[in-house]
Image (cartoon, rainbow, N blue to C red):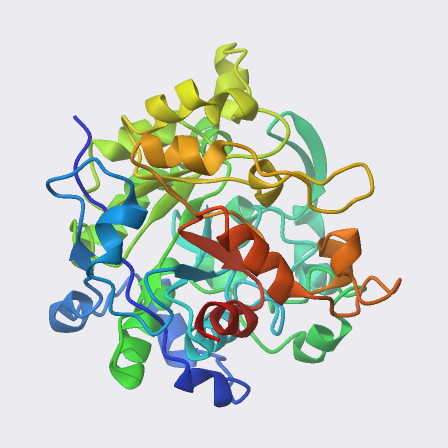
Length: 405
């Protein structure tokens, strides 16, 4: 039986935007040693400060209806998720990136979860870390470079599950797309790979400092891949949420996944809302492994969304599943995805809204230079007209401003 878990998203503080560019360096000697030894700082009083309001307890109505009457946020009830933190301004999945997103006004910060060899959840976009850390510059780890099958595709590099947490902590994060975000390379080598516990500790501190709850929106990355190696992500995620008093229907937490089976399993263990991620191409990898012929297109059909609603509370589609691009590369006509999701009782949080020209529709680009900034304000405004309930953005400050001004 699916739990009733949807809650009001508390709005971001616009005052944080002005101070957002000053973020302390997070090199984390004390926090790192605590994480490596497995010690956990539990502060139930602060954890309870992350709570939001449960607004779906008695209703299967769409979240836009159930939340509108009680929203108290500065940018109404619209949810802004700092995608991998403020990854438009700092290397992604670092404490500095997460902190900057919160200070810019994000309601939630998004840690993508992978695991170490000693089964500690850490935050990286992928288990392969050659493109997001300086591991290639560490001769002691040269022999860790391997070729593995990641969701059916051969990939060569260094993988988190081949390192202990102590070893990973010797590495430093680097910018993933330096050709587009050359400014972010200034911060290469400054930040460590955080653990999930360190991210939670950060949100507790910032919730106190900013006097508003900062939520987390973790994603289980490649769950089938890790399950096949005996390093399933889900049990560890449940443990971390439990020991931080965050496995509650009123906790400011969403859990998301591109796969389906693990969300169905988590639905029986977690009281926080779950979100089914989808893509404009392909299929959930657990479907592929099981021989299920359904694709993501099937998942976001009206029928598919009704099934999603039996185990999840929201859907996180690729933004082009909400408004596809036309033949000229401009935004076309909206699909019925938002309408169908709301009819099923699901919130809709599409991804990813980025300011650089290379990520924008043709008519919203400022030039032919891919790294130049285009008109993200116009793109967000167009998507908001479809009725989406929130969004993921690398540029939290712009997303917050677009929902307040």
